Each structure stands twice: as C-alpha cells, then as structure tokens.
Length: 101
Length: 327
Image (tube, rainbow over all chains, first blue to last red; front, top):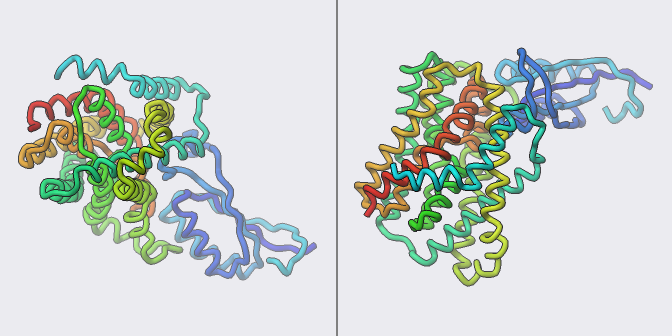
C-alpha cells in the first residue's frame, strides 16, 4: 500500500464540468462523480429534487493523485469556489495499484 | 373576468393536482415523484406539445402574420428583462447581479404554463394555432443575453472562472434540452403531418391530460419545497414583483396581439408566454453566467409565486382579456 491524496469536492451540478476541466488540466488520471441527495447548510435543509431545473443540485467529485497533481488542482479549485457553491477537502489515503494514480 | 372561465380553471384536475403537491410540500409530507420519472414526463410533454404544434403548422403553413409574431416574441423576450430589472431595482433591495438574474427569468418562458394554458383554452372551446409552440421555443433564450448586459460590470468583475470552456454559455443558451426538444418535435410534426402523427397519436394525445396531472403534482411539490427553502430571501417588494410583473408583461403582449390582430386563442397564449417565468432553462444558464446571484431568490419567485399565480388566476384572466381583444 502507498499513500496518495484524496480530493473530495462537493459542488453545484452546473459547475461539475468546470471542476472536471480543472482536474484534467492538473493531470488527474481519473475522477468519479456522485449525486448529493440532501444536506444542511446556512441553517437550511436542502434536497436534490427541490426544482426541476437541477440548478440547485449538488454533486460530489472524488479524485486521488500525488501531491504535485493535487496541489496544481487546488489552486484553480479555490478560484472556482469563489464563484460557485461548494466544499473542498483533501485527505491522505492508502491505495493499492499506485501506477493508476 | 368571467367566473365560468375562472371556475373551470381552478377546478381542473391539472390545477388541483398542483395544489395537492404544493400543500403536501408545505405540510412537509414525504410525498415525492422519482427525479428520473419527472424528467421523463417533462420530455414527454415537450415532445407531445411540439409534435401537435408541428402538425398544426403543416396544415396552416407560414404567413406574414406568423413572421410578425415571431419577431415580436423575440423583441419581447429581449425587452421584458429591462422592465423587470428596472422594477426590481426600484421595488426591492436586490443588487445588480440578483436583479439581472431574476429579470432573465421573466423575459424567458415557462413551457408548463404554456401547456396548461393550451389545455385551459381548448377546454373552453377556443382554438389556437400550432406555431405558438415555435414562438415559445424562440422566447426561451434571448432574455439570458439581456440579463448579462444588465448585470454589466458587476458580472465582469467576477472575471474568468477557472475551468470555464469557450462557448459553454452559448451551448447552454442555444442548445438547452427544452429548446432542442421543442423545436425538434415541432419540425418532426411539421414533416410527418397529420398522416404520420396518426400513428403516434394514441401515445401523445389520449394520455396527455393524465400525464400533465402527474407533472403538475411534481411541480406543486417543487414549488412548495422552493417556498419553504427560499421564502426568507424574499422581501415584500420582491413577492409583489412576482405578481405585478406577469400582469405587466401580459398587458404588453395584449397590446402586441391587438396590433397584430391575433385570434383570441393565439392572443391568450401569447399573453401567457409573456407573463410566464422560466424555471428550467434560465436557472441553469444563470448558474453558469452569474453564479453569484442567489437561486433561492429567482427560483422561489418564478416557481413559488409567479407559476402558481399564472396557473390559477393568470390564465383565466389572460383568456378573458384575449376574448375581448381577439379577432
């Protein structure tokens, strides 16, 4: 097992493509997008089916990479979150098959 | 307003299912329509209305009056956000970006309001033209451009957003799902004509009313949840705007209908289109173009205030006025 960094970004669905571009440009080899079903923030509950435009839906993007790649992505993701609603966290994870990250 | 039209509208199954959904969401019921099912229904409704419009157009063809209505519709969609923006800045404490984003919703249209109006008009025995589906489709997007102009320097100051692609907004504005589905179905209906449509008629005509009821139930749930979530962001002036703006837009559309000598059914639908506010295409475009604007303001207003108003009181009122001014 080897150590890599895991980036988890909860972001509004309309910014998913922008976040994906940032990760690709930073050299991330792959990422996964999950639907966020519901949550709580700023004193309010929210859920994904509140409107049919999907404009308020959130997704979770998970990516794993080495230090340099994740740091490159973080710079632009920080700027993305100046404009779009989202939460970003990074943690260390143990991975098998390190050549894939 | 004729009490018959009003009564027929507010006691129609479509409106009552909307009220059921709205009440259930406000009362915090766990009632819900699966998201993918609701999306499928929305697609079905847009295909059905597009096909029917196209078939009607294949019978009547194009003429100068249709061209004039199309040009007026584009102009209206560009200009209504200017009026909405001015009203919002004077009536409410909304900043430039939020006022511009909200104004865009009121220049664009709600296809569900249009469908509900089409059915209400049909039930009162008044006929309408199929080309108004095309008018609906072309009124979806111009308001977004006006909103970007209105947001002006406030939007530009946010600068380039990381990860943005060239042309992503143009793609969202011109090729959003509702515009492509409506116009595509309209063209298919036009090409295939009455004969071709007869083969799919059992699927797109007979179940239409029932499917619309299920969709309106979902819209009621969405409106109720939106109201519960966003009402804190709406002050009195903003709430009043949600009722005043559709009435002003419908009045302007009524004047245009009078000048263009539209028949009563077409005039009612044209007024409904002008009075309706988007809650599908524009919110998505605004999240891309003006992400700092609050969706809790513009979505709650268009879906929670203007949509229920148009569905219950607006449509009967527009039909009543249209009967007075229509040829």
